[in-house]
Image (cartoon, rainbow, N blue to C red):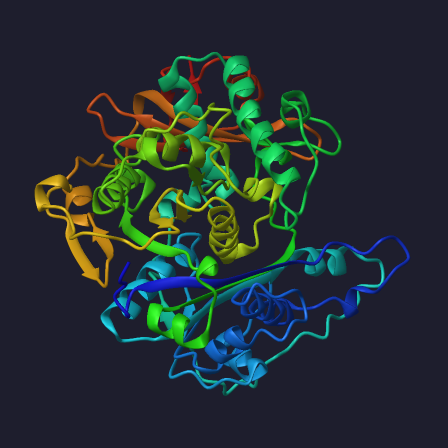
Length: 532
């Protein structure tokens, strides 16, 4: 089959997981920093272009690295580098014409892939390297260590110029939302989880078993992932029963139902044109093609969401991606949904038309952010790297990956296969109304934002008082295992949204033992809601 020379193709992927030393071995100060793990991950991706073993000569990969036109870095969160891309380029000994560094957001790696594939397809770029890493494990271990060792990690001069940024740096919450306690993901995602339970009509124990089963199946995938941080099987009871090692954090989430940020991991991807891959001598069985992708944002602030159990942006971006590739979700063999919390997976699965309890088609290829690990901004690079290996092992199949930023706010989707894209993009009537499409050398990308933006929004009411109905809630727990405070999304009789809190111990006990969604209450001037 003749392939357009500009067709974008993934030719190399690399992952690094630097697990804790055994007791008595090594030192925290000797462990690599994020820059070191990025360097190792790029080295692994370069060798992977040739299918070479670690330390192999990898002539094809090294030829492509030398031709890198753009170096694109997922900004580390565990250490502040002024310009991590410039540092990485220096360590790699390359001088790319362009260096980009992402803003914060788990959507950014997949969004980078979409943008890079388009740039290659247009002929604006020939070879690109995407990389990222984080070392929260070492950072946290140093803080906990009685000697508080000083980590000798790289500090750039104060006069270092800022990087060129990729992605939206818009803040995820309003001031009033933060004042009510919506300041961290662990306080926000339970809003979605409790709303999903109420919408599904499950009891509290039934829903806990449901999400425990979902996460148990994710742990089974992680067992076979050599780069996963936690490679043990976990039962539903292990995951959902609070214990000293698995405390309740924010109902209904125990620690093992949340993303595991304390990891030291890095990943990298080499993308190039088909002509560059062929010219460098990359074996054809290493090639994996980006087929289609899409990016979209839900109504940005939580106060404006129509509800807390859906995501129109995921639904429309997914529909557009599949339409562009002239396929259906039933025909996609491999899936990796962004999995910071169970609610993120449940919403994405529902919007994409995927059952979240199908034992034959897991919703992850890595094991997810609890077990595979959550290296800050860079999980999506690990997701793609794992998906590439899965596709190479099963030629002729396709795989879909998703990324998510902030609070089910920013979304990016990509579809991949071992065969190049064929045929023109579909007619516009197969896409959500108003969708913008860009196509380059067979890869197509959609922006359905106009369709998302046209959907109904909820109007907030910061001055609401009196009778309200509980829409959903999030109950945070203290270290002593008792509920401390709840953030409550309420609806006024006029249908507007108000934020409240609960601190009364008896009312908190009700919210974690009985269904709180739909319960009536009285919103006081101090922001406390008295439940009935």
